[in-house]
Each structure stands twice: as structure tokens, then as C-alpha cells.
Length: 251
Image (cartoon, rainbow, N blue to C red):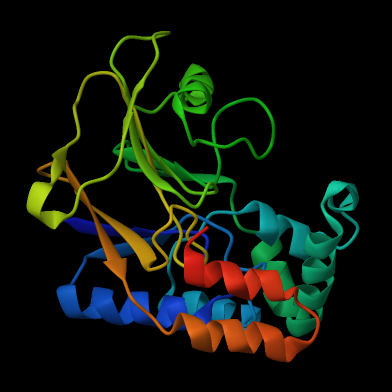
């Protein structure tokens, strides 16, 4: 079986990324795919970028990757001040080559007509979310692939549009003991959650697995030293303490 692992929204959390990659090395997988937001919010952006580069993990562009690499992006001015401050701090931690690498990441990728990956959504607008029935329904209006994977909302969810135009079925992704079989009919979007800043009330890092031949899907949660990452955020003296506090709560 060809076993794929999907990670997303690392958000400069190198402790979480290291724990997840160690877990993947232990359980084994044939390919790791990263669905964007390598940087943003967290204390170790350069370490995260370098690890993804070193392992040559295929990666798509996330909104924070774009904010950080597009030095004069006018959309940044529309963000909350604390996010703008985090973007400026993150930019200062990265080399020009690392910023260039982030800026050149593709918006989406197709995998041999098996599925498509992107950071956000196929709905109108650059960075729309897939997080509930309404937003998944908007996504399916633009999704051409039968199966796709996204991140961005930091909450792992499975959505199936059995009949075009009707409200999709949305559910949580099961663990390995209850693997979900992905249907071949109707459109499916899988939100793979977040490694570095989960927001589904489970603070552990998140990774989603998919087996190509069996079309089976499941999730793993990986513990890491959240307090250590929180302290690193505090030690920067620049990143808002709230970015560290939320890691302990998973929200």
C-alpha cells in the first residue's frame, strides 16, 4: 500500500514539527506532503523552513507564507496588529533565500490525477476556509478534483458532497482503529488540521494518513513539549504571549 502523510499549518513550531516527523519515521510512510503555512505565529520559522527543505517535502503556499515572503503585500495592512507584528518579526528571522523559497511555493498541486492539495479552499477569494457545512459547500462549487486535501482552519475534518449542490456531509476524521473509506463518487475534501497550532481543542500536533490503493483515511495526534514552545515565544519579547498560551489549549 502507498501510505501518504499530510501535514499543514506548522506555524514556526519546530518542537511540534520535530515530534511529528519523528513519529512518521517510526510508523513509516511513503511520502509526506505539506499543505502550507510553514511559518507565522511561532518562534522558530527558519528551523521549520530548513527542515522542510532538507527533507524535500512537497509544499504548497499558505497565507502566512505569502504574507511573510511578499514584503510589500497590501493585504497585510488589513490584518490584526499582533499578526502584522508577528509577520515583521518572522521576516527578520529568515534569510533572503528562505523568503524566496516561501514566495515561490505553488498555490496548489495535483498528484497524478489521484487528488489535489492546496492550503485553503476552491471557493472564491484567495484564502477562504473549509470549516463547516456552508464553507465546504462553497468549496465544492469550485473544486474540480474528486478528492482534495487542505488545511488553513487548523481543525481536521472530512467533507463529502454526495450530490452536487446539496449540503455536504461533514464529520471528524477517525483514528487508525476506525479508518474511513473515501468514496469514489461525489466530491471529497479533507482538512488535515494543524501541526503547530491546533484549534480543535486538542493541543497535540495533527497528521492525517491516506492509503492510495485502499482509499482509507485516518488521523494521528502527536504529543510534544508545548510548554517549551510557549516559553520560546515569550523569550522572543516580540511575539504576543497569547500565541504561546493558546498552544496549551488547542484553540
